[in-house]
Image (cartoon, rainbow, N blue to C red; front, top):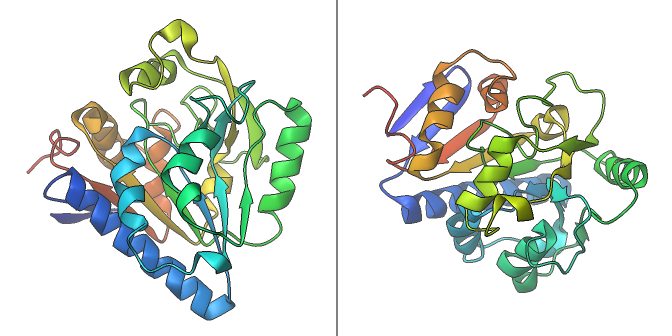
Length: 251
């Protein structure tokens, strides 16, 4: 099923595995085109279980990783790079350990807040982003731009944030932490303008727990009440999903 909601295209695949393969084929083609046109590409990745199938399928695609610079979109504040629940650990296990990119820029979650944000913003500003590969949170967040802190006109590219309770609970629901008390309360995140400033966006959102967020993203007002609703205004964004995640949409 393919539908368009304002500028955002929804592609609901037959199942979660198909969703991952379709998103990977789309992302690989965008990266190939960027490399052909400019000799390099710059891409941001989300780090969450919702991305597992997509990243596994992407590793099977033909991608000139030697010409690609890799970023990621958020990191827990205070977690070391080797911490099992850090997003750097996730990205290494699911992607970086299997490829040889041109460059890799990871957010130093254990660093001093202002230094981390300024340093990563400088890296992002070196050249335009060709692509962001993201998901959507159960509360409609993009990266860690939860409704209370999301700003569609944010002057910053990277900022520290306090995580919304619903966001922290999602980390437990995803199996990343055993209890809510273990989930960090603060994180670093790329802002909404940083993410939506990319030339193209691929958004991968599977599972029944995301159904309400999908419905609000596509049918609700474009508002920070559901930060992902801003995707409907991006000129080149595709949302890949599966039947459980699309279950609340009208036929």
